[in-house]
Amino acid sequence: MLRVGLTGGIGSGKTTVCQHFAALATPIIDTDELAREVVAKGEPLLEALKADFGPSILTPAGTLDRTAMREQVFANKEKLALLEQHLHPAIRTRLQQCLATLKAPYVIIAIPLLIEKGWQAMVDRVLVVDCSEQQQLERASRRDRCPPEQVRQIMMQQCTRQQRLAVADDIIHNDGASESLASQVAKLHRRYLEQQGA
Ligand code: ADP
Image (cartoon, rainbow, N blue to C red; front, side, top):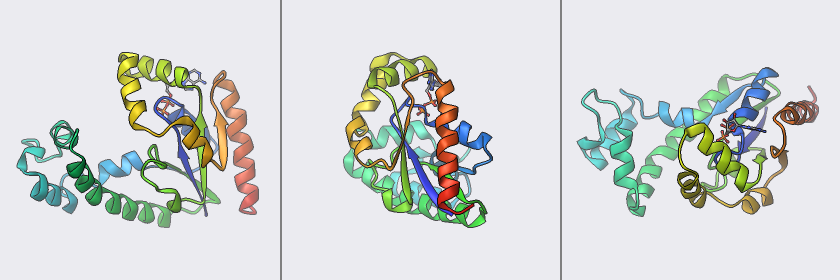
């Protein structure tokens, strides 16, 4: 099964593109979703985080208090690295488990920070959703009802458009009308099926 890693900056259109692939019956794995699953209540990882970060990272109900966790790792590189040392292997294991259950010529694995986290080896191809930075700002701030400045802060923590394009095997250009996405996705869908001889 061909593993296509889909990435792109905030507001570039990853979720929208995934919806188009899903409409063609392509299985989608969302690593953000996996990241939530591995720290769900009852997961051993949550206990390990509590041991390392203290009980304040749990809500009274025993679930992960994301705000408390974010406050601890924000502006503390060591703590962030420690969190990632816990999270990344667990996400990778969960991803392998998900992949093992799938039977399809290819799968889209949405990994927003694929390049930033160096996860290229987890996939066979890198598919980048690309648009201008101005469009990212406008779309994400409209979607999240937040000031563009807040989106810009997030963009500054992500790799640049050029860095992403430099490692792309395939590119979806999302700088036009959303209608053109469907035809770009359909074209890639055919290509991925052909590559797998399906
Ligand atoms: P991401 O998942 O990369 O953060 P989304 O797919 O959520 O991005 O897209 C960001 C916002 O922009 C969403 O509200 C989406 O509906 C909208 N959007 C995506 N592509 C287009 C487009 N081509 N034209 C207009 N709006 C778009």
